[in-house]
Image (cartoon, rainbow, N blue to C red):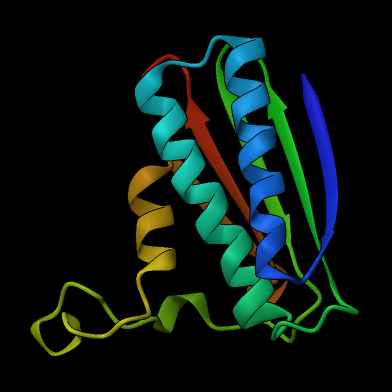
Length: 134
């Protein structure tokens, strides 16, 4: 099953992503644990694209692609921003960052997905969630 989505950069559009993940979960019989990881990571990636990538510019779009097969779920999120250096994000678990209100999105995405890849200077992220643990 595949789903493609293009949304404007408004945080209110996060509910559309929630609906897609819910639909995939029901139609594909996704395990509860995988569902939770998928939901949080997809929302974090989309929120980052809207807020940090596209800087809340409603004239810019976030494109999402979901693909489910018997073994895995692939989620890609692409924004129209200038990108970022995903290798230099401060560790949110470091004592000096514990009280920061932001900076946890990429950390969560990395922890919750089974595989994560950034391309196009960070404007494109692909997350893999295995349905059968490797």
